[in-house]
Every structure is written in C-alpha cells, then in structure tokens.
Image (cartoon, rainbow, N blue to C red; front, side, top):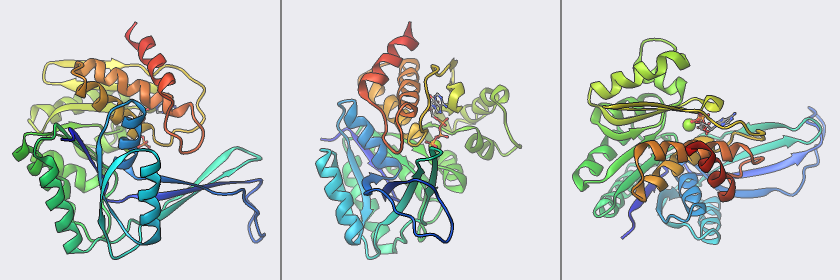
Length: 309
Ligand SMILES: Nc1ncnc2c1ncn2[C@@H]1O[C@H](COP(=O)(O)OP(=O)(O)OP(=O)(O)O)[C@@H](O)[C@H]1O
Ligand SMILES: [Mg+2]
C-alpha cells in the first residue's frame, strides 16, 4: 500500500526552451524544447522520488499532452493514477533569454474538469486514502471545480486517518483550513490572505501562524519566506530555520521541493523540526538549479547536514 498520495488537479506539461533575445515581431529561433511533467503534486512526487521515497500521484490527464505526461512519469519511475479527461492537459511555456539569462514563464489556464471527472478523482482518492499516511494536495484549482474541493479532500483524509497537507492559495486554501488539516505551507502572501488582516511581514508571520493553530484549524503551519527560510509553528513550538546562502539560479519548484523534503522526513519518523530543516534544505537546493529542474539529492543532503549542525 502506498503510504503517500499526491493530488494535482491542474497538471501541466512544462515545455521549455532558450532563445538568444526576445524581440517582438521577429521570427525567433528557439533551441530544441524540453518537456517535463509539472503541477504541484506531481512535482512533490518527483521530488520524493529523488529522495528515495515512493508516492502515488493522482491527477486528471487528457489528449496527447496527457499521454506525454504519463510517459514522462513512467520514465522517472513515479507511480501514478491518471483520470482520463475530455479536454487536453494544459501546456505551460518557459523561455530563457540566453543573452540576459532572464526567464519568462507563460502559464496557461488549468484544463476544465467536468463533474463526472471530479467524481472519479474523488472516488479514486477515497480508495487510495484507505491505508495511506499522507495525502498531499498542491497547486491551483482548475475551472469547473469549486473552491471547497480541498475541504472535501480534508474530510476524506480525516475519515481515512491520513494526514492532509495542502499547498494552494486563495479561497480553496481558506476552505481547507476551515475544515481542518494537518499541515499548511503558505508563503507570506498566502498567509496574509489566510489571516485576512492585511499584508504580513517576516516579523508578524509567526503570530499570524499561531492564530491559525489556536483556532485549531491546522496542527502545523510552516510559513516559507524565500531566502529568509521558514517558520515552523505548532501548538507548543515556534522555530525559525534560516535558509543557507547559495548561488541562486532559479526558484521554480522551491515550494514543492520544500513540501517533499518535509513529507520525506516525516515518513521516516523524523521530528517536525527536522522535517522543516529538510524542507528548507530541499527548497534551497532547488534554487541552485536552472530552469524547472527541482534539486539534486546530494545538494539537499549537504544543506540539511549544514542546517542541523
Ligand atoms: N532565494 C532563495 N534563497 C535560498 N532559499 C530559497 C530562496 N527561495 C526559496 N528558497 C527556499 O525554498 C523554500 C520555499 O520557497 P518560497 O518561500 O519562495 O515558497 P513559495 O513561494 O511557495 O514558492 P513556489 O513559487 O515554488 O510556490 C524557502 O523556505 C527556502 O528554503
Ligand atoms: Mg508555493
């Protein structure tokens, strides 16, 4: 039985390329494109695999991009279950301008999901949840799906006795937290939105996180703060983990890498403090790689050893 299930409602094929200079009106000749499986939960599954932890990725997939998504995961030995959709899986486009090293990320709208597809996803999730330890939902909610979706997933998790981790934003995050989850990993913007009392700073983040805990809506709040690392707040613990200073190439996938680092550590019986240290190590290690590449295991382990010293 798979112990960790990831859920991605808005998966994508990330298509990336390089061009010397982005110039309007001109035909731009790009380098051969690279195709990668993407979307929050899928990234978490890929990152877990790098750390040697198995998971099962559940997601909708349609059309040719949906087929490609599945074959890319097969190549990476990531277990998955895809729910066939009527509409094709979206494709995002990433261009790096070689002359300046600037990255341009074009995100397409999520693929519309139909009610029967949503029903099939939840049905499969219920089956998989039985016997699982962690359910990790990450990424945005696509058109066709209501903002209460992760609150419903939270109920599935509770019923199955699994710990639910959700990393999303806006109303869907609010409703999940109102239902009650094990762990949320908001960044400052997401936490401000959750807290609903204006824009928070690094200094006020721990108090806002404590508010969430005291309202008994989540057991653990990990506030990620980019280069400033993260705050861990539980009922009886507040800890700041400073991010190590590294040469940053691209922050793409830092949040998902962080979530994977935490789940990996927790599934190995590590403490919450160690899990956040591993999360920060994986998040920061992800910034050491260019483009959409997540992190190298060796970098993550090295940063973790440095953090626990
Ligand atoms: N510039 C950076 N330098 C060092 N570490 C970083 C940097 N940016 C991100 N990280 C690491 O990655 C973790 C998560 O990053 P961040 O707080 O930016 O999450 P996020 O906003 O959810 O990211 P995402 O855009 O991937 O969703 C941080 O806690 C930190 O460990
Ligand atoms: Mg994020």
